[in-house]
Length: 446
Image 1 (cartoon, rainbow, N blue to C red):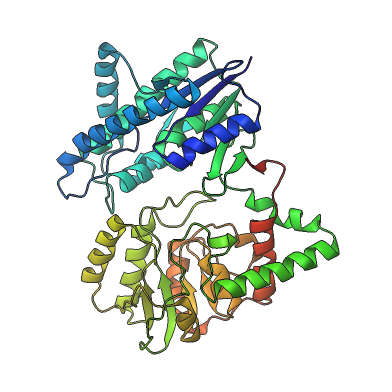
Image 2 (cartoon, rainbow, N blue to C red):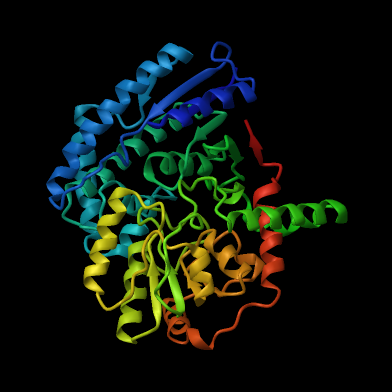
């Protein structure tokens, strides 16, 4: 009999993928000890500037989701859900005081907050991104009750995970969803620290699973091994895949949703919006402001809003001929911060959200972003991609990769002097093959 711990999440597609994973691994609910954990961490959508509303909203939303999925797991899998952050009243008081002390120790200091750890398990960065995403904030507000709430709940989870360890209750297998935020990332890091075999459903839409390397909790494909995967292909297979990749990219540029952008609701090339903005030395391609930034090897800015604001400030102060392109699939909450930046940097040109990337590439020299698939599109068209952090294609060397904010801003200021990287289109196709067609032994579909 194996012990399997699974962290639940309020997502129908993830629920179905849990069932697929158990079937794929032949893990019967009758023959194995399967425990479903529920975490309150990261649930708290606030649409108000009144930070006092963060906490009650988080509790109401979480309780509703918990009751819904408790019924689903019971009726369809005959498994009960346990709250991974549930502690008795006396311990609650102690942990609350500990949480106040932790907040006080890093109050007003972003770097200290991001560096918080518990018994060698770092969680400060997860705390940081969970607050931004689920409190719907552009930065950390240290007086927000929701921030203290997240710290407190983190301590509750650590307490329970450590008690399981002391009771020899560590599982044989741990399954989670995305590990970029506290609710899944914290247990994933804890189990990775104790060398428990862990898995993540890295793509719910594609039902793809990543088996974590020992000591790792990253849900992403092993992008650092892409070139090795390519080297293992025969010449014929490699050439055939390159032809297929080029055809799919050309289809994308005509408005099709291909494998590489399967997660997008709207193609960035399908718009019939008439372009009339003239020529730009560069265009900044904004992200959704609630994406996590540390899924790869980190970035040179704290978060997406920090990157966007410093970039726009540089453009406005230096009167640069660089425009801003909003993300075509931004969520409603993200629009709040787009508007805030538009108002603050009113001299910077904003392109219409419907503007096709095809029009942008014909009327600009460079493309700027933090990370993402847009780099492949920029480089394929012979333009100059400038990144602000690590991304899956960085080892293919068709992007400019500054390592400090100063270096990044200098590239922006001197954008008219930059040249495209050599053989960029060929390198883009190689990356597309590795990223979309090849999998390591630790990656599989269910």
